[in-house]
Image (cartoon, rainbow over all chains, first blue to last red):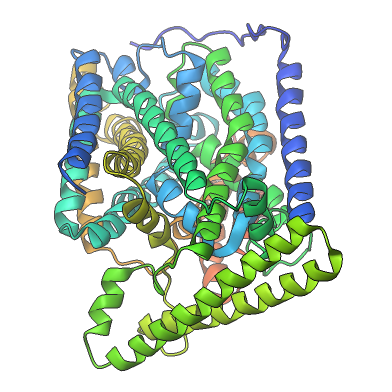
Length: 46
Length: 565
């Protein structure tokens, strides 16, 4: 049998990144950092 | 490979499979079999998502892509973090609230049963082909270089994964993937370390990057807006985001991975784990390929990396031409190595008047070597004027020729572990979708859980047999990792359009979106075969067409009862 539906979890359970908004911003920040670093890396060594 | 390598290979693969089976023995509940016991922590889900996506082509073919074309392929993954955030916010709560086993159950609840079956059908066709490629891709390369029988390689790997996936279900897949990805990371990091240690003593790591950069292998980001280029930042972000949205959000092989978590939190964090680590992982593998390229600037590589095919051709009528190419290649490569060393020495000397001429001379020498390589590839092609591809053979050639025994076994284990982990996720999803969306829904709605568990095992095994059969009949000419993405891009846009219509176009009903999706899929196939736009753009085109045609057809169909999730 399928268990009962569950509510949306609001607590991330992570240190520092306590809200989901903070988690998503952290992932976006990592993404922006990677793209910038790769662009600089390629241009500097070309 | 020697005995030690075979012990590492067989011992690792079989022990992981047996451990997975032993830990998950006795699962008779459908929920546990399809979704796991709900105790999988987020980092295991994250690794499982990564292992399902990263097939053996990722580790076999991507370094060859880095060797051949540099780091530009990393842009293919730029859309992934953005897509994963959207999925965590929009898709995950809906799937969990509706308590679905498969993503396509949601389409049935929101639209109607024919749309659910269309979504499931598109998945089964696309993923069925994908499962065959997953098993064929490493087998064709490894059997060629090892001298193994292609059919025996396909059958043995296919049978192993079929057994533990069919018997153990979702938890067995998660558990084995955790250890398989551990072996993969260990092997790739070790190969990277050995590669760096084998560079010439006078060449520092920084110098190696200078050589790679000077020969255009480190240009990772292309800002030009050209629809015909395969990889630009724009095709990566927009096309790649649609591809990733469809793959992670609507492909059951991924949905099943994050639904195996006990809560929304575990599912979301597993996805975010990939949002953070996907791009660095791909960058690392491509950089490995670029460094293999540098290594072969100072170590004589084969003229054509598929040496088995080269030697077969060299024994025929083309022998004089092949020998002439080899002689010319030897001389040009030796000259290039010397000129590259002169350039790096000039750079160390710090005299700008010497650096630039030395660099220009090295680039000229590189162009001459590449011209000979191109002539060799054309000589190997069955089509006049076209060049045969050998990039899939680059990394395995390096592994076999330059790694010590034991590590060769470890790296070959990496390729097979990646094939098994990816195929396990696919078979698990194919079996689940066939059981839940077709068998339980259409054929046998009122049976007991134990019956569906047995049916699911048989369907999983059946899809394993289908994938093995297709793999035994397959032939491929594209670079393997690109071929996988091309097939995905043709079939992923429309299912994503179905799901986005369900989420955001509340007025569109089942009949309109069903016919809109069918027409959109036809147009995408026509678009692929009749234009030369970069394949990543097919994802937004398919998705957009499905949504647009659904909206237009809805205007003709009129009022439709919908059942919003």
